[in-house]
Length: 398
Image 1 (cartoon, rainbow, N blue to C red):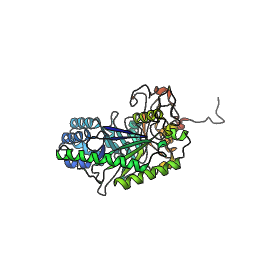
Image 2 (image 1 turned 180 degrees about the vertical axis):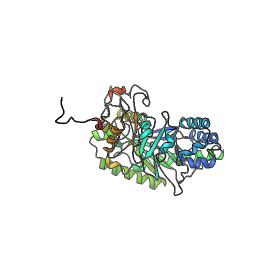
Image 3 (image 1 turned 90 degrees about the horizontal axis):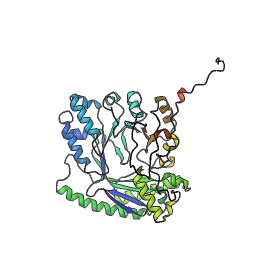
Image 4 (image 1 turned 135 degrees about the vertical axis):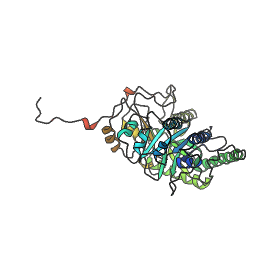
């Protein structure tokens, strides 16, 4: 991965090709049949995933019963290899819950897409933190950290890619010139295309996954939403500047622009140190020394602080129409929440983010550095089950 630092932004790209991508399992099956050659399909995925430093998303746009044609031992080995392939994230639909509940038996790098939170055995796996849930409707797949993948009319999902990710704090929007950012991205894209053409000429790209230049875009990720609000920023004004930036980049780069929230604490810390070290105008509301200056990942509250669950799920309503992907949050809880409490909690969220629960028996995500620590799970407030809170009758005997 190449990381280029500018005044107020980070640019993450690959050295000689796309930075991240996605594809549907039907496209994968057309190149290597899952029932007949599952290990060839897994090898093809590994060949592509190792070339994308930003990660690869496999969208399961097929029934889960496709795997039942495999012998049990082959199905188990293939699923474990698929679920733990480095750099790969699985995205599933909830239309076939019975098929998935027999496969999801441990924590996976996977997201379940559906308009409502899962219930039953699949809901238990979600509440145990074995996978996340994203409130997506049919026709599009929201990919946290990557972008938005739209389904073709024939229900196919061909490979899609992004050139790289531009990460910047919301407070810097007022001071950055969209035209200058467009020139920087254009220069980087031109150099990457030349390097990628050499890779293609050397036949060092998997032929099973064709590359389409016109559909390859850029991702713009925003963070520091809490600092922006504490500094007195107006969300409506931020939405106007985000829209202006996206319009300019689309017009100049002639490619799609995927807008989303960046939840990477490493990028948030690097931009915070830059803003404080260079005395940049958007350093307002950053922690003062001796605390490490770092922006908050994403657009809401700090997920590592034991605050109320609602505050950790909140994100600005004026930005909702602009973000192509649903913001995803990781909620640390002191115990596995009950189904009724989760249903009541999610029903009260407006808008609803993607949620991944983190009970105490699961390790919190990294990086594990002294500047960004996760408190013990018991320090976080529990999710109260409103269905268990019954008032005694006035005429009950005491």
